[in-house]
Amino acid sequence: MKNFHKFKSCFLVVLVLFISGCFSDDTVTRNIRVIAQAEVDGKIVEGSAVMSLRWEKRHDNGVQRKSKTEAVILELNDKDTVYVLDANIYPDGESNASYWSGYVGSALIGIKRSLNPGDFDLIENASGRFPVLASRSRTKTMPVMVSFEDESKRETMFHVTPENFSRKFGTNTKFISIWFEFTDDPITEAIEARLPLMFQKKVNESYRQKYLKRDKDGKRIRINKNEFPPKFGKIVFKKMDFN
Image (tube, rainbow, N blue to C red; front, side, top):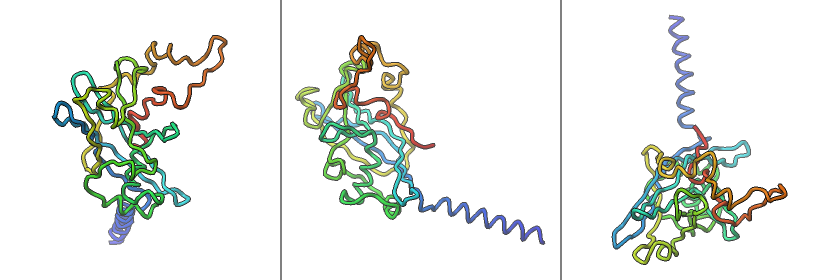
């Protein structure tokens, strides 16, 4: 009987710890599906990717953002593909390699204040689909979209915007919109197989020749912060911040 009470006490302790871990106010993790749409020859084409976002309470009561993201693959036709990155470009040309964890928070609580742990219940219970609008972003921008003139050469990456779709891909092509929606679907893992160029250990030789690291005297060459495509590496195509 004594052993039974001891077992019962241990069981209750474990159960309380388990429940506390499941309903911790210190972290919240949600999956979102990001959907990009365009119109080609009067028909809708769509690409999507499921990403996982995590917000953790810091010791100073702030919020640390983590994410498992990868680029959305939007295939327009047999030769043109657009990639929606987890990144944004500020108006001054600076860039940030973490768009979605910030955007989702500001889309839910507004851009007039910063996300705090008191908002975790709101994130946990959020549902539905949301249009991605610059007006809802603290950066006042949309996520970066890129394409390649030649997907075997990184230096051929170019910036795609909602306004230049027709100029880049033909008058029969236009951008429609980007959405995100909360989902329980597992995260997508497709970008490495689709675009191995960005995940090679060494960049292609033609890229190395165009963007030299050192001059003829061996001095390091500083690439302009606004230069494109050196601005973006593999982390904006795929990021795995947590297990």
